[in-house]
Length: 275
Image 1 (spheres, one colour):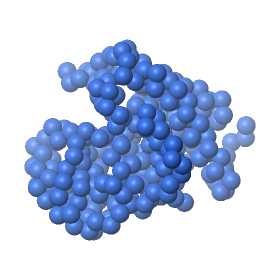
Image 2 (cartoon, helix red, strand yellow):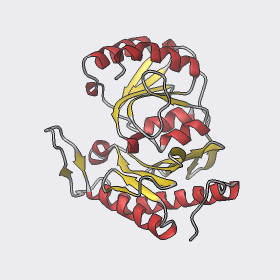
Image 3 (cartoon, helix red, strand yellow):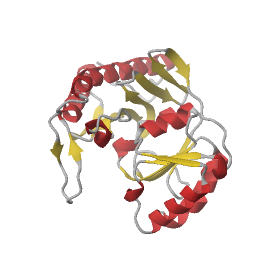
Image 4 (cartoon, one colour):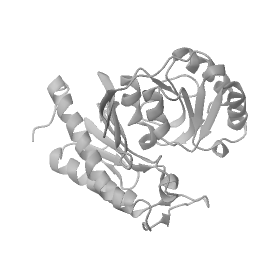
């Protein structure tokens, strides 16, 4: 198969990659779903003493995704949480987290997701957030984002919320914030209307859908966030670090919002704790 060039990102090319991304979601779901809410080969890969779970579903799904990419686009690179890097400097690079929210997965709670993103020339350009147990794939690029589900296809759009006092926010686990970041989160939490926890990357999809207003996270890896960047951008959302700078091919401290005014207010609180 010929290598795609920088001038080969036609609408037809993007549509083909979009279709392939749905195929990757389907392939990973075939591996994961039979293992959800079962004994699924749980391991602890922690090196610091903190519980860091991985399951056979994580490993099997990433392996299945990698096989399809190698068959369809052998010139593409891949970066994945479970199996590392292969040609990370290629023009096209897939960034994979087969199960984001493994703790939710092993607890039987369906807020875990499969994150699949595609970089073009180093920048996130296409991504999906899939939740196969409930039959949802949130997918998007700069042209727009949509939800594909059992009910059909629905365009995604963030909602307006210009005030922290009216905002619904979330973070995966407030205990992940330490010292100055914990103080910043506490101030933010006291400023918002409602806070929820333990949604992992499913929260990013809820911002794109217009159900949540703000997500604040810390300690993210590239595979935790890259797939969400195009989905949120296509829905009108924004992702920055805690200083307000763009977040692309790295993670770290991240703030996600559907409204620029809301994001600016959150950054004012978070900035003193920025790393």
